[in-house]
Image 1 (cartoon, rainbow, N blue to C red):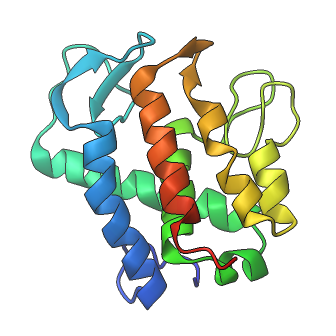
Image 2: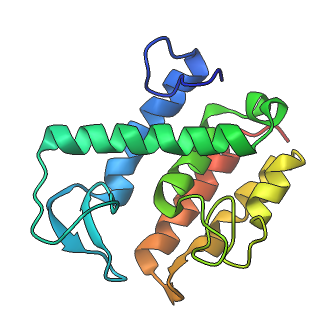
Length: 176
């Protein structure tokens, strides 16, 4: 997919398919909540899982939530595009790309010494999922998704169910 084609005008067929999948699954997986609340690990959250800059007492409109969700999908695509080689991305079905973008939307890129995520683990190493994608083993990378069913060391049932759905979506259209 060419740069910037997720959601933005002129999307490729695959980019449009990925965007459609995400715009249908993220609201289900994340849930839309207009007033800010504390998520299961006590992080102020609003809309479909948006945490950046959120304070308890904030209230969003549906239009603001739509904009934040689209921004989150675009940011997830930029991370994916930067770290996964083009030849791997271009060989992936839309469902696999959407599954990884859903994961990135939820977990973020991570940061050495701070937080585990798609790119970096707290240890400073790259995630196994990313390492597998970078060598083109998409199926093995998909199978890493259920390992990410906890937040701040707490296994969360809802997150486990989401990761199982993401893995199923990721593997669904892969060629054997």
